[in-house]
Amino acid sequence: MIGVAGTGTMGRGIALLVATSGQDVLVWGRSEASVTSLRSHVSKWAARKVEQGSLTAEESAVVLSRIRGTTRLEELVAANFVIESVAEELALKRNLFCTLDGLCPGTTVIGTNTSSLLVREIAASVASPERVIGTHFMNPPSAVPLVELVPTEKTSRTTLDKALSLCRSLKKEPLIVPDSPGFVLNRALFGMIREAVKLLESETVEAQTVDAALKLGARHPMGPLELADFIGLDICARIMENLSLELQDVGYSPPRLLQEKVAQGELGRKSGRGFYSYEG
Image (cartoon, rainbow, N blue to C red; front, top):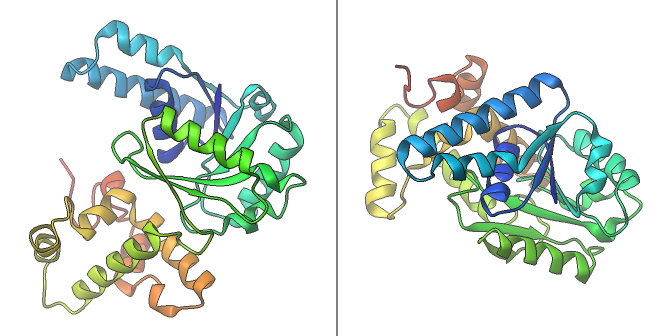
């Protein structure tokens, strides 16, 4: 069984990915409300798949039966691989890893889905750092082939092999990348998103033009501002802040326009408005 710690966008997505691959998954949430939200999300997902014809009612029922939620962290002791997917806050992740390290058997791998923090800093709080590894899934996990695997200097070969095996069982393409700020993808991706936002700040170009230029000229399937809306502008701002801090480079700091939108509650698709409007 696979464990997932966190019921947010990525936690739900990873849980569905695991369940649709034919494996059982236990998802931990900090509150009954978060677990209820998880159940609602996966039920709506299953109903959409049936309506679209991509799953039969029987198949969707089987997928749903493989996902269980809990507020009791100690239940994750039954998992042979736990993936942490809570907020991008170092203290929060460190505390959770310290608890998981004390609860889970020594053979359990503990992965972090962090996208901008250093894995070695998260692992610094545990007594068994050899079983910690970065497992950076992309959003949405079901659609993006890549998983960045981020071993630290203390990650064991056994842990890495188990992570590679898990990725392949989920039909993902694992890339082993260095434990550096933003790893590979986000280091490049958020630099691009930042520059796209800075273009808007000049007030000489529209969001549609910026996105069209990248889609038509660089063959990107989604423009950087559309992508930022999809990720969530609050998450984008937090990742940029982390990258700027870790790299000691103000060139990664969130632009003024991005900060203003977050302050106004314009967070992208999830709030109905970001660089584009999704209302109605």
